[in-house]
Length: 192
Image 1 (cartoon, rainbow, N blue to C red):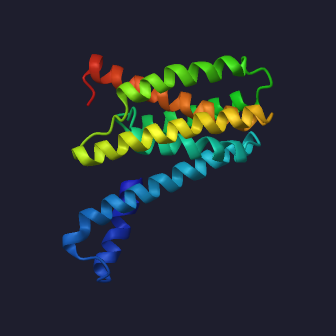
Image 2: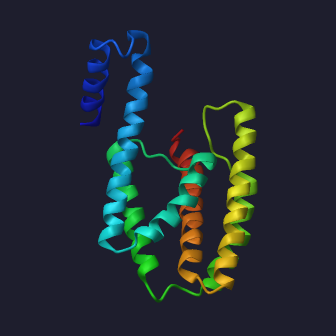
Image 3: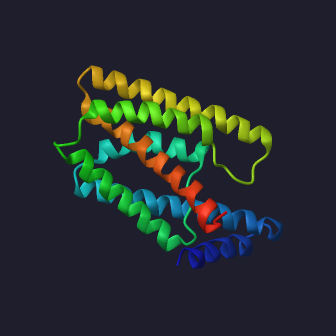
């Protein structure tokens, strides 16, 4: 469905002389990313609205998307699986953040801080098909984003803003889980 829509938009641009034939693949890729991201955001915000957790989801996304962008993580082989996993992640986040019985946040914070920091420094980033300079930049970026997240989550918790502290911790846990799945799937399932 997305591919058909993207092809129609690009072909229209070519017919109207706004896109040259030589740039067709660039536009196909760009519009595909634009449409997939837009659809994903609309679906995510709709799910969050159903749970009345839009602001919380935005706090979660601020760290999760930053970590995924610079640190990599698991990518499913098909669009359908990607969408299903994303929906599952958003629903799980909304349920967890809406729960008043989240496990002891001190324990969560301590585990994310210790184990997460170790994983970030040992395994991140998991970005593929980039130059050594970009990989070095991604390594610095992901370590900085993760560390800043720990500090902000700690400050929010200290000032009794527990919900948003937990949003950041859940973003970090979700990204770390994606990182672990990526490592394991590459090692044991030969997914590259």
